[in-house]
Image 1: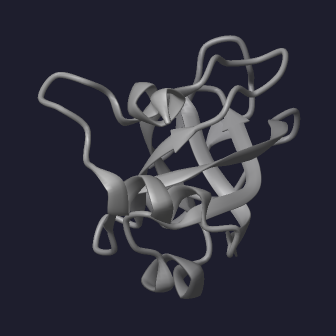
Image 2 (image 1 turned 30 degrees about the vertical axis):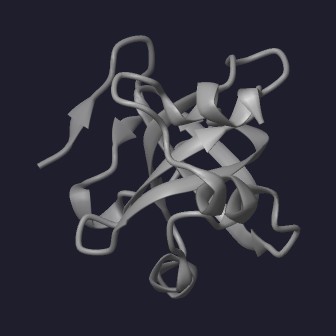
Length: 125
């Protein structure tokens, strides 16, 4: 079964095509720190940096297209890639694990306090 999103005639891909972008999907470079990984759901929680012209820095759940990279990710890894925005669907592709250590140092020093987002914790370092 396929649905059609508001504002476009292009059908939304079936669940099996979760990471298939429709024509007109937006793409932005993205960097951030992995907070958690859910391999079964093929998602990560990412404390990402500001995406210029699109989104402030925040912590959010995003799908990861490359299963091989997803299984290698762990909290504290720094990642970079391409954020794909297709209507209400968002995911990362061309994902790379960055070995710069900026995220690991924060995870090793301390974890966020209760009620504090990880992105705010990173900003305090």
